[in-house]
Image (cartoon, rainbow, N blue to C red):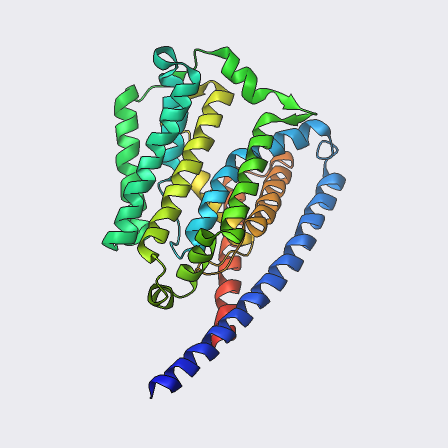
Amino acid sequence: MTDIAAMGQTTKDAARFRQGSRMVGLISRAGLTLAILAVILYGSLANPVFFTAGNFVNVLMSMSIVGIVVVGMTFVLVVGGMADLSVPATIACGAILSLALQPYIGPVPAFAVAVLLAGLTGLVNGVLVGYVGINPIIATLGMGTIVLGIVQAAVGGVIVYGTDPSSADFVKSRILGVPMIAVIFIAIAILGNFVLSRSFWGRWTIATGGNYSAAQASAVPVRAVRAGAFVITAFAAGFSGGLLGLTLQSARPLVGQGYEFSAITAVVVGGVSIMGGFGSIPRAMAGLVFVQLLTNVMVLQGVRTPIQGFVLGLLIAGAVALDIALRKRGVA
């Protein structure tokens, strides 16, 4: 095949890939909208507590902590990084250090140091994945295990308690009735959406995830972009962990357990492709809303935790299967 013919074939494949992406987008938007409305309708009919202000505030608080991680995880999936399994460790790092360092340097510096150290975890992940070429699952799982071990050793495996009640009062305060944590989450989501959809870094992220070789040939710093996605996720998880610690005024090494699963579920159900190259923050947020409302309904209805995990696992499997099927159809 000549170079001209090869370029023509590549262009056709790219066009079909975009067609598959648009198909995924249309189906995910329509399906998610209907699913969210169905959950709201069922919840309001099944349990009178569901449609109360107190319940929605609780959902919003929980959604905000997970949602900050979802913003970062969206970058990882879009860039083709599969997933960041070190999230529980970086959340624990943010939560524990933001409380443990309070007596020595004060609440604000403690929070900043905690987030910074969590971000360093992402930097190591990024180097391993983006520059060394290690599989993201292996790299982040191994790094998470190491960081969690360090955090456990640093605090002796015990629960750490906060010593500054004013910091807890701040994160629990409200602005026009909206919890401060929710305000912070919304601000981070808006910033993340701007970076991914409006900046050159976002365009590079989508290009790298969509076609790594083509992006590299177009002078996109693909290794730095892939590494940067893991740094963003680590900072987001560390920030989320810090807020969680300040809210609870206590933290233990396993405080972040399960948050990576919740974030991945929301992102994938929102229609962000696990194959990379396609997705957005609003899609991930829609997935987050659906998953959080569904979980809330199951909790109110007394559904056991193993069954909840089974349902969410089915959602991930179904979303991934649909994404792969439609992508194959788009590029076949």
